[in-house]
Image (tube, rainbow, N blue to C red; front, side):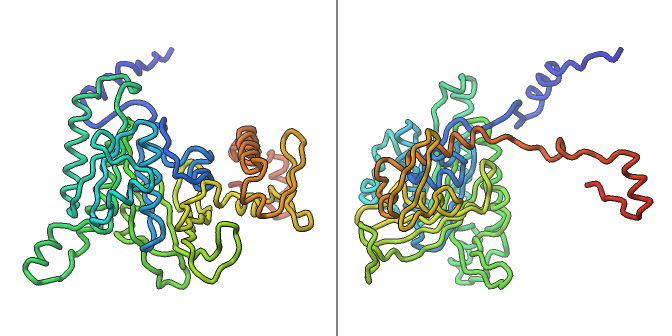
Length: 377
């Protein structure tokens, strides 16, 4: 008889003798809303869960696409509502206190620590020293008793390497020869590994530039591909003009922006899905923005003349014009979200390997005789 393997002894030996190794899974326990139900769903598969802690999330886009609005505004505000302390690293010197307060961010010292630095090395040291102190002070506590902390970097693209600074001082701007891309990758990769077992997360913004490749029209994310692979969640954003008033009527003047967000990378829902969020200048983002387009596109809402019809799970029929859905008349969008979550929970998980049934010997012999032997994947 084979002797049973003593996994407890092996587990104890590994965690005791090898630094940087932890045991078990690190599924996110804390989620922070982006302030928009549809964007939350595209990222996490849940309308109320947006960005997870213990991971690294990057929002990338052109200037004025709404990255800072979502990251340094909405996500920080929603994190503070959950008692999460925020360390905000401003590399652009652009996050004014009044702007943050207007978005609902609490800038008091017991809720927010704002740091200003433009050096990748400084950011790395800040996070490394913090994690060392955090493990020393809270590592032995029960996970539920540990404080939750969220780092925000706005933005990665404006961080500099020592080479860039030295060249500027010497008046010899030759470029950093790829050092910045390597350091950004190292920064993100180390954060992913350090945060995994704790309720600590990093959310950053990054810049994009127009693609010159006709076969790949998506905007290119600056900083190299290394940190893109290392990040846990990646959302690409584009800026469009919003030319409609509060009632949805077309106007000739720009009333805000339409932030087109595509979730390029996520492990919690289907990737490459997008949402267009309206952010009027005078009212700010509507949390329901984008839901109507999503439910219309996936066939949940059916056209009935000039209105959209929906039969909920209780069998009740709802009919509204487009503006009625946009206003959330009768709480119709809340009903749609609730029903979708019920359907998603009931959806069976199909494993292709379990469903693939190998052909019998008789079937293979018959196929071979007809020179039609099937290829089994």
